[in-house]
Length: 426
Image 1 (cartoon, rainbow, N blue to C red):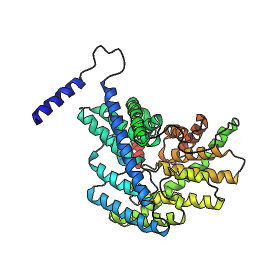
Image 2 (image 1 turned 45 degrees about the horizontal axis):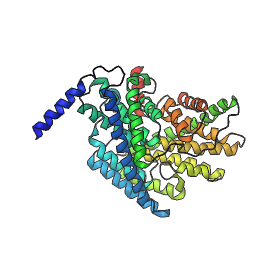
Image 3 (image 1 turned 180 degrees about the horizontal axis):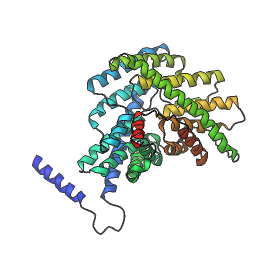
Image 4 (image 1 turned 180 degrees about the vertical axis):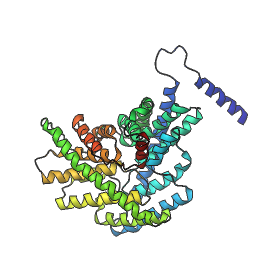
């Protein structure tokens, strides 16, 4: 039976290796591979999201002082998972593998990433599920490419398409997710991977479709900002000014993270001790400022719908930024894009309270764009993502804000792999 199955598989692969004859269209077998990868990526993302929501619901019953021991225990468990099963790495490892390892992402540490990130995100860490999903679906793309004997740029494109499928499923923006999977790899020359844009788009569309079916996702904005009314050409200038303020917060976040990392790295400690310490610190912050708990997907709407005093908003801004830095440096697993959007929204509310004459929606969205583009160096995808997530109908002001954050970002990038790429170019 095994020999017969192998023969059938070889025959199927031989058929797939042959071009489609008499085909007058660009449509080919590779489209089917990208679409199938997108369906697999969307299924993985849907299952991950369902499990994450279940765990979050179960853990969220602990409130008040109870969040401190709960987050400490979850941090310890996540650290033990990483210690015994394997270290899945962080976003810089993905960038390195795509850039220097022929596009191959190793799926062997996926169990460690899935379990540890679920514990970290569900318990209330200030990192989101986007990075784990990108790594898991990207490595699935690598595996999928190897199954169909792809090599070189085709294999790299399949890995990037897998990354895009995971990112798109969470954000619901196929174009934004596809561009992000290119920009995050090479912040100066994303066109180097332009061959992967069509595979990424196809996989993203099919991933979004199956993810929406699994979790019953509808169309529309995720975050409820007021409708923006264009007031004239000066709005572009305001968008730049707001983004400059957000970029300064990006600098603060980057260097506070580096400072905390130097403290955690000063004395070699087992990963589970670091995650335990991180859990205790995050629990203390969540106890005093409950809205800083979790990665911000739902908390942004809570922040926008409630009236907060100026002093309270400033405290939320400071401690949310600190919580993200602690989460990143103490070994907790997750992504920092949505948490940075939360910081940007908080800063926008502060600016609006200090200067009530400013347009609230423009202020918030510009700050969200500026800080994320500053830290991740992804101005194109940031612009498209925010257009989709906020329902902001005017594309250009967000682009102005994103480019401001990008060009005013520190020369030494936050993602270390981008620094290596930059140094190689120079």
